[in-house]
Length: 79
Image 1 (cartoon, one colour):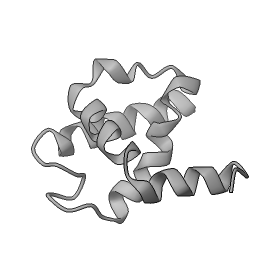
Image 2 (cartoon, one colour):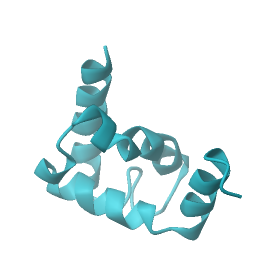
Image 3 (spheres, helix red, strand yellow):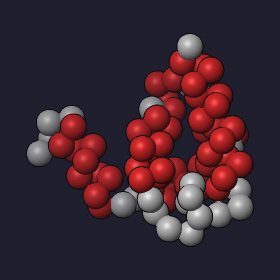
């Protein structure tokens, strides 16, 4: 079931961000916030993120956001 979920997420998000900066257009929205944790686990699920240029760009940009890093630190108990 996990590969199917990832296949859908990768296809949908890849299509969206190939034509815009973020999933819903040029602004960071709840769509990006909700999707990011799924893609952030790409190494665990071996989805080959590097094979998806636009999705990799989006992931790199979102992962550099201070609020995203603080959220992940809080979730892991670091803060």
